[in-house]
Image 1: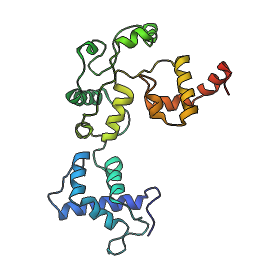
Image 2: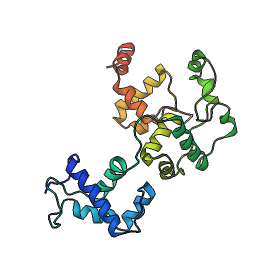
Image 3: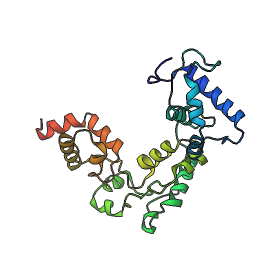
Image 4: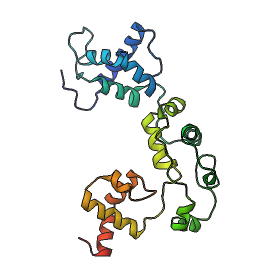
Length: 239
């Protein structure tokens, strides 16, 4: 039996699907749709432990060759994020963005002054390209809403409505739809903060992003890994 630390194989995926079906047949009360919330309830009831014990055990007659021992967390994540029927992948549609905004507004809400900057889907309205570029300055920053407090948002609820995982819903909002996210050109001052903090802290992207209002952890990491680092060092005679 393999140790379960490598990538999932096609045999393991087939085994996992079969075990989920078997569990539901033997336990009719098990949730039919495995959202994040129902998955937690199922795990508490022993579903994923039951499946995990059978994934890589030769004690069960139906055990196929080439299956690893997998933990209940590994089984649950593989099902939720890859194998669950109805799971949506690929480009997000405007309708999905609208549904995600509806859930976020339900728990976080938006200030009245912020709404005039946004359309129904949360995208910023109006202004030419030059105006939007200038909007990255201090004056526009004052008009931009502060980063929303999404700590109370139930991403599992959004996942159930949209058909994507809770993790994807959270990443979609924080990295793309949040009105405080800045997507314009990086300023020299921002580069100085980024590269200076990285030299002191290393790759602590979340901490570095906290010092750059409007820049997400992903954008900070991508900026550092791009050719901007070399250009910055040449322009400022650093390194």
